[in-house]
Image 1 (cartoon, rainbow, N blue to C red):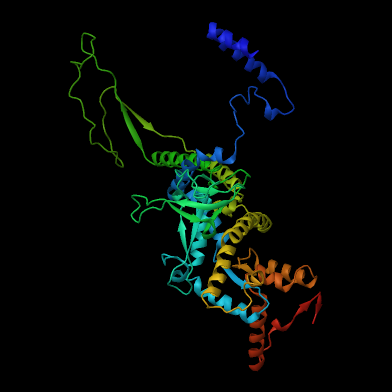
Image 2 (cartoon, rainbow, N blue to C red; image 1 turned 90 degrees about the horizontal axis):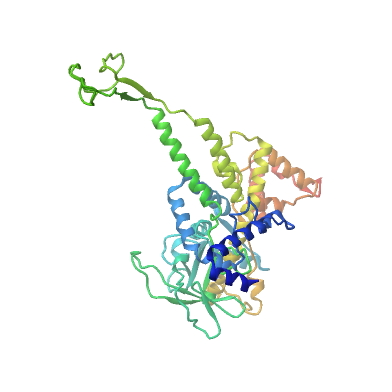
Length: 490
């Protein structure tokens, strides 16, 4: 039938348009297996396409990132979400625990790592320590969608290895020709035949930010691209705030409008309504019967004042209605939706605990913690683990750490764990009793409880033993000497 439609459109475009309109109406009336797939009255304006993730993101990526940054700078609502992630994903940082079979080597690695994490040793600019770099990475992923880190091998510092942070803006999208034959360059990233990144084309901002330097190719082994991949065909980052940006923007505009309205409502505004003047012959103009008229310019309302108006003038007071209660309910709803869109509770976003009790606060905290745990897992695997492994290799090559059989058993010497900083309890007594019961009944071990508190269980036992021994020497009895094991008091 396609040839018939073309023929009709050639001889009578009007008839062809009418036929097309009726056909769409019939298609909308047809009922398939899913309401979501129909194009009836409710879904008529909903047109969606199936495309690859890169094709879908490519044209909106820069605009969304610019708007997210604008909200980061100017919106307290956006910053409340961003700071919630920064506080809970990184917080006060992570403690390294080397897990080789050699305890002395573990202590040496942890000692060198602690020194390397200082700003002058880990940051090529010498301005941020490692925890501050992690906080910046968490924020940039939330706002920009991701961040790049370049491994720099310099001659200064405790190790010849430092990190250089690069913005995703600096990926040079205009590069089309790959460095290696058979590869493809898309969005400034060079991919091999399996769509694995093998290199990054970076064009850095100049130091004054006014211009950009020439594009430079950086091998993938020397680059860490920290972003979250949500679809198999996704090649680059997309701001985590993308789904929430319109709501944050609309809510900001609503807050501004309510604030202006409340400011007006707090003021007394008076307008003078004048009667139209006529001349004696009925034509518009100044009346010959009227005497000298009063001028209200510069007049102000003061307590107890009496003032005579011109004949026919009326006073009208502007008194806009107060919508504070409705605005409060609307803002709470919007903030709940914003938080839900980012996987957070209303309390985590608004910091409003007025409607919570222990149970609801605990449940909200558990749900939020699951969201933060996903982010922390990605941060550890994509960034922290890669940095630590390069750190150990650099320490061995520099001779700072001597391991004879390192290259034959590299995986064994790279084993490690990250212990997150402890978080405050909602109700310390209830949490402590819950931990005691869990340990007595064998549901948790002392090692697990120590890890949840952000402590190394061996160090904690050493500290306890040291304190108890000192207390015995001073003749002081402490209850900390009681040890629970498999539900029996020893």
